[in-house]
Amino acid sequence: MTLRKQLWIAVAIIMLLALLVSVVASTVSARNYLAQQILTKNIDNAASLALSLSQMPKDDTTVELQIASQFDTGHYRHIRLEDPAGDLILERRNPETPQGVPDWFIDTLNFDVRPGVAQVSDGWSSFGTLMVESQTNYAYEELWAGTLRLTAIFTAGLLIIGLLGSFLLGRLIQPLGHVVEQAEAVGARRFITTPEPRTWEFRALVRAMNRLTEHVRGMLAEESRRLERLKTRLQHDDVTGLLAREPFLARLQASLDNRHAGSSGSLVVLRIHDLATLNQIVGHQHLDGLLARIAKVLDQAVADTEYGAAGRLNGSDMAAFGDSIADSHRFAQSLLSGVRDALGNEAPEALTLHVAATLYHPEDTTGKVLTRADLALARAELEPGDAVAHEP
Image (cartoon, rainbow, N blue to C red):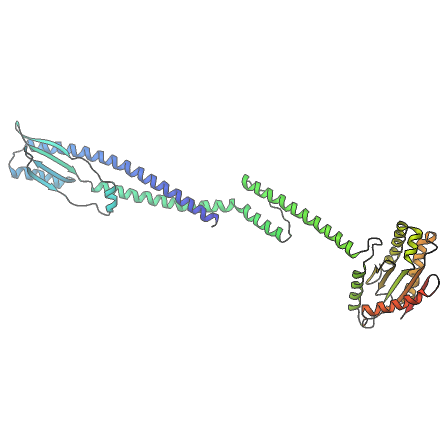
């Protein structure tokens, strides 16, 4: 259930309770007041009529005419005249009920007002007892009309308060909508902040959500950096920084797949002869530095090519390829010269480099290119000292 519906229900309940209390209090107060006025009227009318009857002849016609005249001109429900023994002399009744007033309302607010009683005298003797009850229909009708007016006023007030409350509530709960949008944005990896509203409770909520958004942003950013570092470690060799075997071969295959007909590129494989023995001679730490410097030369050689990469295929083999290199043999010789120049006098005497070069074409596969490189590398290893072999 929405907050607006809950507000409407709450306002309706409050207004109904207020209406009930107001109607009960107002109606009971008005009933008590009217009952007091009716009682006073009964006493006064009974005394006035008894005085008039006491001053008139007491024959039946005169008494009946006087009572009938009083009954017809006034608002009376019951007039009764009894002799001193309590026997009925004359009685008039008006059985008319209130117009437009429900029976349950009449039963609930029953005017139980005692009648006005006065003695009618005949000279120095008592002629009889007069009882007068005023009409109460108008009181019921007025109370019912007042109840309806009060109900209409409260109903109009309920509608006005509900509409005003809905408008104000819509403005007050705008921060909640912003918080929902912010939460959905976080789920979509969009990090936005919401201005803090004036309402203290909503301000605390928005402030906490903004902090959570910043925390999630930082956490995801850190996680992304960790994943990027992990990806780099998985795809690159720890010692040389070159691509590992699988990523390198994937790059080579992508280059073969994307080449146009008639275009070619070059693949060069550099092998360090007897790496295990060299490790024993120069030591593990020095050998790692040596490999890193060799890898740097290969990486720089393909940096300016259209689509090239350098990688470490295994412990002793490094490779590089470039799409824009048409002369693979010259490319291999320049790499060998570049490595020797980079190492200079620091190169161990036991270091021997064998370089194989081959061209690759659009119709080639990675397996075919590597097979030709292996053939060239096998011929280079047959040569004493550094050697370059080419397989077309």
